[in-house]
Length: 115
Image: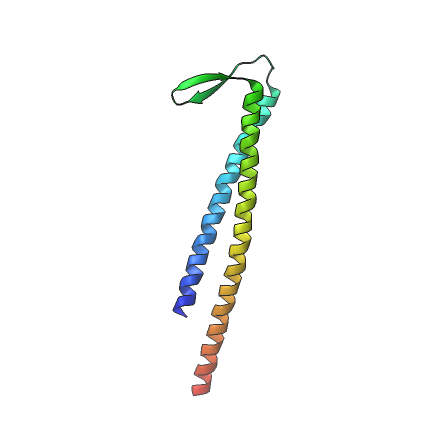
C-alpha cells in the first residue's frame, strides 16, 4: 500500500510538471504569434533588428518572419508532445488509483473476515 501511495504521489508530481510545461509553451506560443502578426502588419520597407547579446543586428523582414514561424512550429510540436505525455500520465494515474482502491477493498475484506 505504501508503494502505491508513493507511486501515486510521483505520478501526481509528474503530471503537475507536464501541466506547468504546457502553460509555459502556450505563453510562448501566444507571444510568438503576436510577434508574427505584428511583422505581418509592418511596412515592407521597415527596418527590423534582432538582438544578439548586447548588439542589435539588422535583419530582413522575410528572415524575421521565417525565424518566428520556425519557433511557432517548434512550440506547436512541443505542445503536442507534452499533451501526449499528459495523456499517458493520466492513464497511469488512473491505473494507480484503481490499484489503491483494490488494495483498500482487499484490506477491508480481510479485516471483515477476521472480525
